Length: 275
Image 1: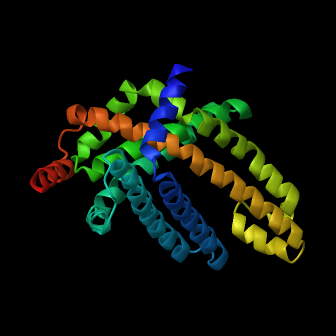
Image 2: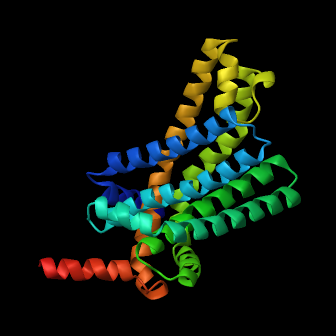
């Protein structure tokens, strides 16, 4: 209970006066990624080589966009404003973001596949899968903060793991509602989608399924759109404390375990000159 109070206090402190802007950035960037990813499935032959190549390139760009959103949390805890210079800096760091993001994505896929092989009972698989999702959500965030500060490649991975170990209790408390909501979504959203659209019109992709169903039942389209909007809106709300507590943990530990923060040192020097 005390840990949850600490999580609430620090989340409120970091989001003070800028919470809506940070939520809006997280929501609209994530929704944009989802919409154009789903749109590709509608417009292209998903079995074709062109789709595979374009989809892969888009997934790499997604990593850059999400890491840039996470930079907002670093700026927020340091009471700084995110500006044009940060966007330019994000573009310069794009190759590193892509390489690191790709490695983490492959690692998460590997863990998920192992999970599917060893946990055959649905509810047990769902719990483990949700924990993997939460772990990599936090791990990706910590790595992104390190990228912003110019931490070297190897320390990004080892330092992030160290921070997660040292702050496991707070990070778990911050992500518990996200884990529960994610489990509920994985269990209920597909079933509700199939029941509303009909199994003949649902093939795993939201937008193609909705468009095919539109000519059958416009009301079903409204229902399924609202269902997905509610689900993802809550996901992004629950991500805020996860990112806030993870950036606080990063800020308190990165001097020791991720010390090569050239970006951070540059900002400190600039602040001293301004004084």
